[in-house]
Image (tube, rainbow, N blue to C red):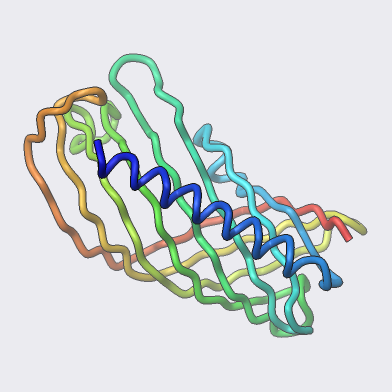
Length: 194
């Protein structure tokens, strides 16, 4: 119970610091965009980001996703993910090609997915953290709209427990894994607020 309560406190402190950073930093910026990743939205995962210029060729992207949806039967894709990124734009901010470095931190409870053999009969719960590099391209669609595509590669450290079902408390196994590979895939719709 203590571990669960401290997890929620840490989450809310992180969200509070993110909002404080966003509000104080964006007040002086010329370019600020709110955004959503359409690939995450396609999996019924609400997600939101804000990106702001800190230099004529640098932006900071603060993006997160939070899914509490349980599907029919024993299927769960519950997770939250926070992925901040520093981007370097080769021309000007929010125009054309960019490269970036990102971090990621999150927690998941997934399983009961019938078309994935390893997830069909079990659920996996635990935290993740990692970092990577990103390449992307931004298209201007209108005065206030933009679309970007981005792909990232990097490292993720996973610690998770294996359960028989979504609500089960009996741990079947514990794992620690290191993952190297894709860490980001995005087709993002953006709206510029100033």
